[in-house]
Image 1 (cartoon, rainbow, N blue to C red):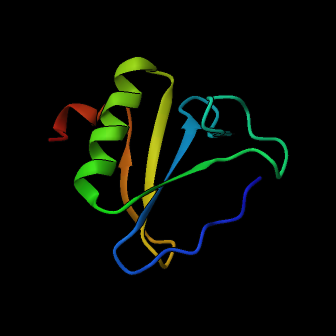
Image 2: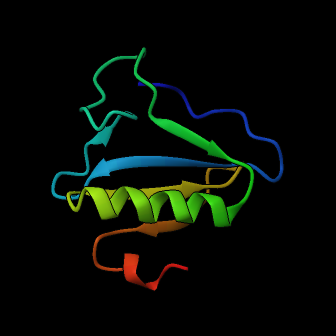
Length: 87
């Protein structure tokens, strides 16, 4: 699986996972099983990352998204249950 990316202070990294199993998914929503699969999507601000996550969950209710800060802290954990609370 792809390593956590180096982010600048304002960047965020979004990771997708199967909501039932917690298994990490790549950008194509396939199970991430090798180092060549891209699993992180980078954003310059939280609003854009949240809108992207909302769109992902609108299209696939079996996915959850986690948005991380530079120091690998979870900023948002978006699930099918809480996606309606987003902007």
